[in-house]
Image (tube, rainbow, N blue to C red; front, side):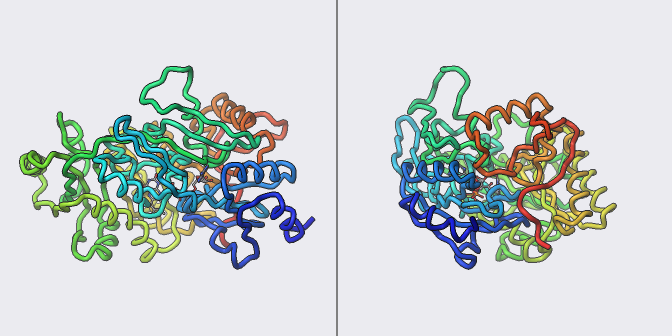
Length: 475
Ligand SMILES: Cc1cc2nc3c(=O)[nH]c(=O)nc-3n(C[C@H](O)[C@H](O)[C@H](O)COP(=O)(O)OP(=O)(O)OC[C@H]3O[C@@H](n4cnc5c(N)ncnc54)[C@H](O)[C@@H]3O)c2cc1C
């Protein structure tokens, strides 16, 4: 049966809106990567029961389902395979309950990260993970990719803040994991096994997230690093200082700074690499802490006084436009997300420079320096043989430095071939076993995260194949 003939059947199975037709589906074909797919339809389920009905229909018809929040993922995580059905969860955007005593919040998965941040201000609380995409990305997407952001330097990634999940599994069953408590010792924590699952195990219908007490003041500092090589010295000095008030330590190399400066209305100056720092304090401590930080920077050889952002949030929203700045000037490019032990950052920088030279692909590097997490961007076509060869060398190089192929963006369709190289074959097999338990028919987001099985059904061999399969790159 063709796609068009299956739509009436789908429309009967669910109560929510069913969107179909090439024009109406155009916005659901892509995420923020270079990949795309051709979905058969998009469904906006009315409620969790309706979502269960959709999953049952998909099981009976063997139709792939792809949960979607804002579609801002960078490795094809939310790109549908041809003929799949997108589940649009962006309208499930209610903040259901804030408990200032337990410091917990219950939300629907479509709440935008920054909207939660704003809503929590009056409670003196905040949800720490603040990805660069926080103006658009959803909390469901954040949990499904274990997202992080500048504040993860102090507070950790999303995983550390998930206390409870309600979800519909690929079996169609509805489950709850976690409790409305801050502590629990009841065997291995089930919730954590769904964090970072990229929509491949279940669809979140509700999230319970832990909150942190918001500092009274959060000041941003944009520090110019005019001297080549200063970066490692300054980062090391700041990291090793005891009782540091820093909650973020970000970095943009000179080229990325130049591009962001164009969008910054004079708030960031080009011509040198930049570090972005966030200092937390109470009202009364602010001046002392800032003066101490400036003195420390001078001691570390930073010659120019930083630009001060009295409200650090404005700095992070600006920093979140780094990708947009490169979209404008460089266009489609290989952009990556690797992390290495902080002590090996110098070797990672050297690897990026070597690859840029060898592939004649100018590099633009920014990222979460304090966590050893860089986003190297290369001006070379993604999906092209040379672009993918460069990507693979970078990822394999990060592994050789004791690092990871994905620090925060996820695996998606683009990096799944290298998962066994990082995890090992037995560990990749465990991932598959958990997948089989939650989604026995493999209908949830196929072609993402999991490496291909061998022909005999066994887990994949650990040798890195690096092959990108799943959604299609542009021709
Ligand atoms: C400019 C820019 C800056 C970025 N900066 C950062 C950054 O600093 N840190 C960072 O970590 N990431 C960053 N990202 C990547 C991206 O924004 C994050 O991965 C984000 O968490 C994705 O959220 P989303 O709502 O867009 O999810 P989507 O792209 O819609 O989905 C992402 C994955 O989550 C799954 N999913 C979505 N909702 C659900 C649900 N309810 N149930 C189950 N699965 C679900 C999808 O199937 C998919 O696999 C950036 C992206 C851009 C474009």
